Length: 226
Image (cartoon, rainbow, N blue to C red; front, side):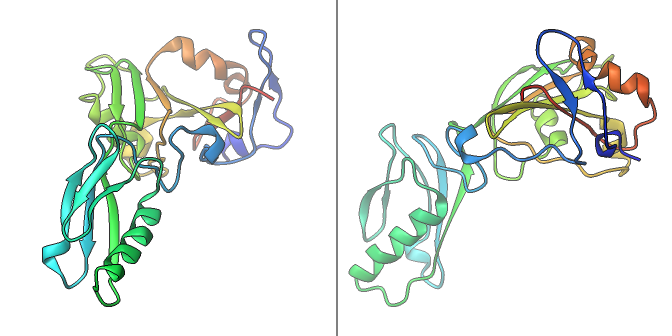
């Protein structure tokens, strides 16, 4: 049984900030209000790299990088602003512009290839702690790999992910070894997440619940702010 799924889990009384186990098996994704730029359909910013595909017309397809002002230049239609827009919104705008340029029924797909505006912080017992660009659908193990992996003495059963969800601070304790063995899914990582590998100070947040139920078959989710 997942400790995060136990009903009536006791609140954690460490520190001045209330903490309680959350009845879910996953750390919830952030809401749009939690992110700058926002979440599930990422917003594009200056210096981000995009892939633009116009199906059936290779001459109009391109991989482009936004300039410092957040503009890109594309064949046939010239310069457009992409800052603050999602890939879906950009694709819809391009369809209109290509129709105006006499392209019949353009089918356009825009994909964010690389972003310097959306980042994840990886700290603790990793080889290269730091702030790294995040791509859509990045997982926990991929984020740690971006920091060159855990160091030689890292406690990979102690990986904490901090996230703000609907304005509330949350934390999740993961066992990296269990994820690698396929015991449970590799969780998705979102912009502004903080990942701490093997630091006992972060794990102390979970100690009261762990003492009550030390055998955990999945991630442990805590609400740090009400």
